[in-house]
Image 1 (spheres, rainbow, N blue to C red):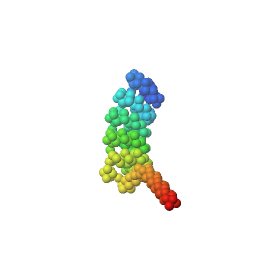
Image 2 (cartoon, rainbow, N blue to C red; image 1 turned 135 degrees about the vertical axis):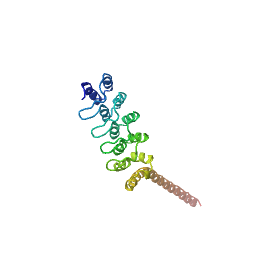
Image 3 (cartoon, one colour; image 1 turned 45 degrees about the horizontal axis):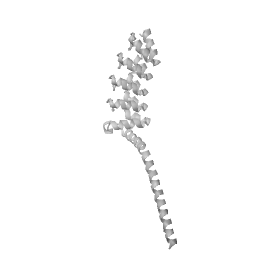
Length: 220
């Protein structure tokens, strides 16, 4: 059960008052205390994206493996909400990359689903499992594709061979198709512009040549 100090700690975290959080931890507030809803101080700080508070709690020994009633760790929450600075701190502290919530969704899967490319990149660099699936059998690449998150698709494609990923052909071709269309749209437009310029330049040159010929004929 949370004490008065713990309640003050929860409020200071919500207010993003890092100085007060630090003082309360030093005076004995428990970083492992939970709210009535079952959230630890670390989970509250992560949900809010308050990186300074997250760092203080980690230094105080907050449990990285603590979960919400739905089974989400602080890392899963940070990835889903797009708090890249919190993701980085949690990874540096040794958070379990491949922990999954009650829907079997890992941090990587939820970062891809939400389209948070910065979080996804951090997780990939840390070695998150690309082949992990949620309880519906979807991988991070499938969910990034469904959401049309081009940056996430590109990151995931660059990090693995599709043949190794056990992805249904429809999803694989959709992922590649969307990514390639986006990559090619700009260059092809530039090529069309260049072609138009070349053609107009040629027409101007031919007109000049014709006018010169006319002047020569007239002089004769």
